[in-house]
Image (tube, rainbow, N blue to C red; front, side, top):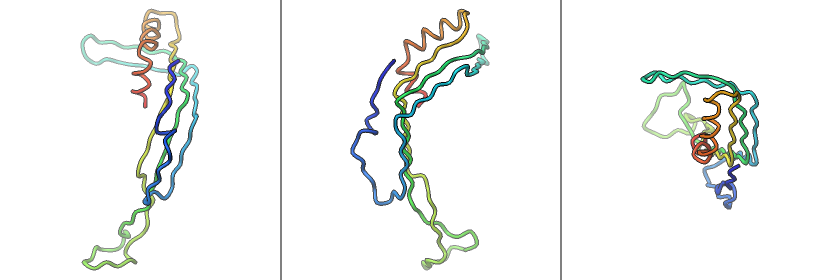
Length: 133
């Protein structure tokens, strides 16, 4: 298993003045047993396949930062002068970060495709983790 410590989770928390609400979740793990997958290559050589896979993800984290903005009320036309009553506050997603520390895939089945995919998943687990995130 590849273990990576996400640097943004351990960094000192910097909160900008515009960020009104921050939701942060750490140490997230998930396990998917018997997840169904499929693929199809629509050009030469034409390939198609499907099956089941067991996937484990660990040491994950999510950070959502929201900020307060203003927008014109729907029933108000924009005017040349600023009028505070024409605007309403809106909570908007300002920034988001997602991290997965480790990913393990095990293809089910005894065929050659399952063997090849399991070997490739073991070799490229770092690249696979980065692609998933």
